[in-house]
Image 1 (tube, rainbow, N blue to C red):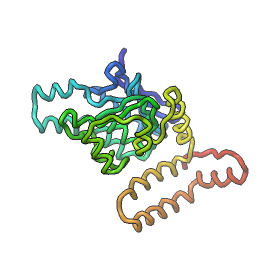
Image 2: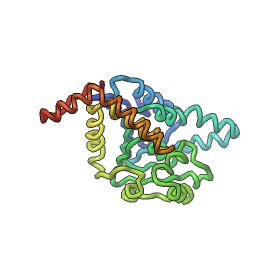
Image 3: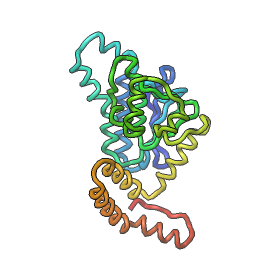
Image 4: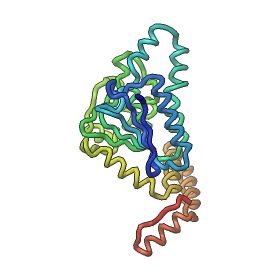
Amino acid sequence: MYQPILFAVNQRIATITLNRPDKLNAFTIEMVDLWADRLEESIARDDVHVIVVTGAGRAFCAGGDISLLMQARSGGGAVERRAELAEHVHRIPRALALTDKPVIAAMNGAATGAGLDLALMADIRFAAASARFAETYVRLALTPGAGGAYFLQRRVGIAKAFELFWSGDFIDAAEAERIGLVNRVVPDAELMAHTMKFAERLASGPTLAIRATKRLLRETAEGDVLAALNLSSTTYGMLATSADHAEAIDAFLAKREPKFSGC
């Protein structure tokens, strides 16, 4: 039976795969709800330490399916369109905003519009060398609706965000890496192996420190340096008394690999 979202958990890594390759993984309302369901499940499960999102076929995600726009023309007004975003698409950024688990996007191909916006919400983005990216809203006489206005300027700076949103032009993977839109570009055939190797490193690492670091970076991204220093010292002090920290010191002294328990 066809499933628009594939989901698997292995070695404490949840992998969510957008599975509509014939449509470049453009999402319908049903698909985005399933995506959000699996994301929320991954966040809630204690046996999941890392979340990976990728696409099947030659694209990561082409954004919302054109059928959604056609339906919007056939009925309903601005209030209905706003509710559609808030009740369905925005479930994904809301869930991601509340989790301190690492989230990695493995961008196997083109990511456009809302598809790119949703990838920007990941903590780390690895891209296949053949991947291309564009913020295509302006071509449809729309503004970004999936959170891109918030996330893109924080990834590449506001001036570059203006350029990408206003032009709607595609950029290749090398340019995306240069401007900070993706963390690293790897050969197409090596993308998932590279992604999973990094995910496995996080999944087997000191969970408390990894998740506390994510919270710390988020909470100090905006605000004054004194507040950031106060939060940093509080977090550091808590982790300095953890079992994982003691294990790290013992392993270093014994010249062995540490075995973290997440405590």
